[in-house]
Image (cartoon, rainbow, N blue to C red; front, top):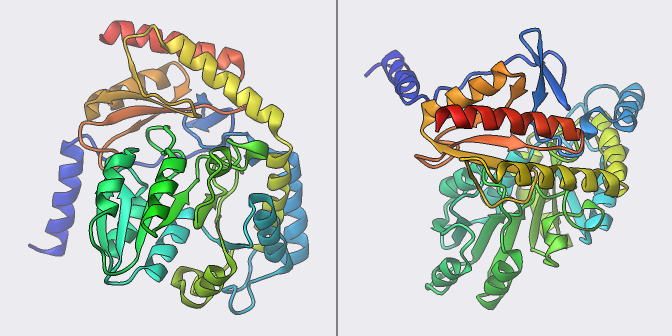
Length: 386
């Protein structure tokens, strides 16, 4: 088979399965509304949970940072790319989340890949929740360690795997809030089991940080858990991009020596670190935003309860409506768009086979009438289709 035949076959298979992905040109940024093809939609697909991507303080901080430091970092943090705003942001994050150190990465994907590549050796074992993010499962599969997956949010399944002999070290990997289901991990139980077997716990809290816990400190703080490795990202509640790894001093120094994604990548722009410091202050002072988001979640769940739709047991900003069939999910998303509502249809391989869904996300920027409009249209299309 030639290169072209291989590519053509893979693309044809995706189209046949109604799993073909395409990008849409966003002409107006993310927020309560989104503009595509010269039309404005109510946006129920983004991850900007607190609406900070358009916050004046974050925008001004980025502009001021660009004036002072330029638009790029100029190199890896190990060369000339580590600037004062990076250092300040790392210190602020570490103090806020109760860790000795924080290390910045250009994305959550890079942070997860870097951690597992740097930490794991051939005699080790990674025990990951089956529904962990692709960045975690891919890095685990490519590492020299053995990968075993436990049943989603089932501590008893993890306990059985932890008890099996392992000549190396064991690392338990999970998320604080799962990106496609919106449910929360039982972190306290997972930590207890891990410690009983001398294993470390790694939590990716991309969808919990900024939203849950006191001052938005996230899922671990909310459940009074301190994992050995905590990953937080800035592309959701912080309204920007990038990530940080929170850990103890020796591990931070180890990662500075051996984390190739950190060593060989250009550091995030200093102006971005300035904006993230402003976003951090907004998150810390964001109790009203979190209350507004919580009320929107409650309003949506109360309104959708009587509809002939399958809603997951999520009490977070992620509210998936399970559909099952790929084409049906696409059709429902298109019907919503015809009514001015932008909702993404998520299909395999992002979710397990048969798990196609409408992934509805709610934010603090949404108004009560936005939620009501979404519920009204969902009622109409569910009545037509069921």
